View 1 (cartoon, one colour):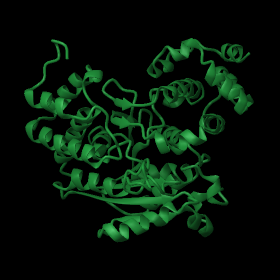
View 2 (tube, rainbow, N blue to C red):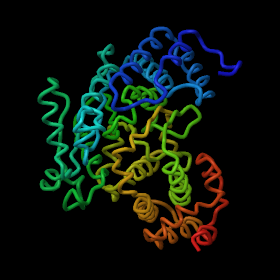
View 3 (tube, rainbow, N blue to C red):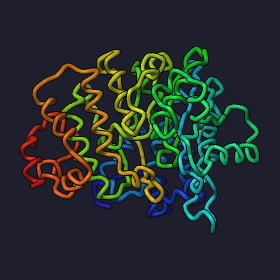
Length: 419
């Protein structure tokens, strides 16, 4: 640590004791994060002091283990929750597909096991346990998993959880019932998470609650749900319709694989050329987003995108309800790439084509967007992979936050690098 890095002996001790890498399959690592968060919550009663510590540590990201960064964000989240007096209900939704390994504890049969279902419950219990004005429920939606992830979740709940606020739903059953939120899907094969998340959010929004926030997340433990208070802050205290976790802000703390990150830059540059009404947002794909229940009721039922780009359609439609309606919250996030379904499917081109459809349905055409939309529509998978292998320097060398104002790579430039 350099001479300008001034922290308390307590925080220095946390840094010294923290694991160099945060292992999502290791219970002791996450328990230590929570214990450190409890200490920070107790020792920093003023939110402003926690935020000052957050900024100071973020300025030295490489010198501070992720576990300590995350502990600060958890303490801040709990501080936010503890300061709110209103009665608030949080619904947490996530989809499961081929999660039959990660849902278990790590053992010889499940080396990547995260025990994520019970850990998520523990994270919410920790955050809201001392604030009786907050209540919560959880909705797990099986996205047509061929390995029975939904049934495994039901079995785990039956054996290990005695609460009545966690339920498992099956997208296939909703489609069979003809629920409007599932249109036009004819089977779960038409969904790649988006159909299930929309269904789960729709179910949550049917409940009449005085102050209801509906949040969706990923199945894995990449985003610690103890950070939920950060999203609550954006909605309750900032008056936004939505608050989203972002991995692209100055105080965001991320462990992410390099190649995936570079593909992400290309993806962000391209979508910003066509979905221009939310250009102030950089990270649309972080699986940690919250909306007021009335907003969910207004935007979720007639989504055209049932795949991985559903996030963008939700944000686009929310922004059409009210400009600048979305608050970005910097979070701590660790890539759970070993069993990531998006890594296997590599959905970026399909997502971009879905966004072209959104552009044509919702937004006013303009020449630049029309040109990029046509270019994206012309790409097939071999052409996309060639583009990924030859990302122009103007995109690769810049940070995604610049792409709202940087237009230096044209369609002609992209075509040139593809040969």
